[in-house]
Length: 161
Image (cartoon, rainbow, N blue to C red):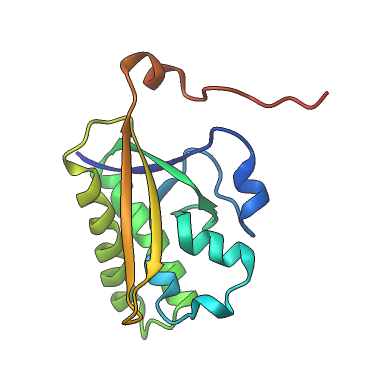
């Protein structure tokens, strides 16, 4: 069994900052690959936010500001890999599905490596920036929740008056 990120939301702010928001509890990866051919100055505000701080949900292909480590079974991992491969093939010009599967596997392995040495229930955030050389630099921040918070999920809920 491996570990991967799942999307987690503490409030509804993701709905306000991203053009497309991931649903809670989707499997998720770092998504720097989506921005490799873009220029920061040419991104609109919501795309910049996704670039700066988003994890890519692998069901909706929307964004989440936070991910939380969770165990993933190898059969589920295969399904997630195939869904990402289809997304890469349809949206990023992979020459064939086999190449897209290889790219998807690489992206998932990168995120799984981030999760490998931390306990289930560790919260991740990311900060991305373009370097002067035009490369993407990612910094990941981790917060380990205590056992009581892991069991309860959401910390608070915002209710309209």
